[in-house]
Length: 169
Image 1 (cartoon, rainbow, N blue to C red):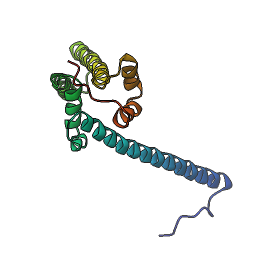
Image 2: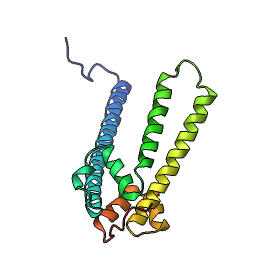
Image 3: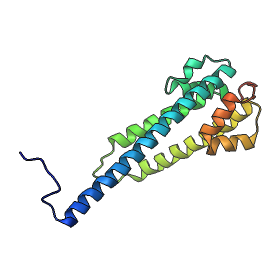
Image 4: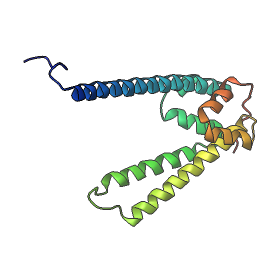
């Protein structure tokens, strides 16, 4: 089998092949840079949560375990009951969507349940940001920062001078 070269192609075909390779290379480099950025952000978040949990009297290693770290965050912010409500609601919603027939349009009931669960989850997340802000002695302004710029404000909470005041029940 002969190796494929550009020699047997017309000028237009050669230009198209090289252009496609260049675009593919640029996309690959861009995807690699985004992936590297996300890994670095993830590492900073683990470190920030480690510091945050330590400030709240929880062992820092709990920040590494997925799902459990969210439970601990709810625990230091307010009541862990809201974590379970959110977790179970999303789990049930996922099950309902998994068992629905993809060949048919979703039922009105499923759409309404999905919207209700998503709104409930948004409200719980906003309340968690507010409660976490108050647990560290900040107010509504800091909570708004947590809502819209979560990674940055968690880093500030973890490394800043904020002290844990206790869960805001």
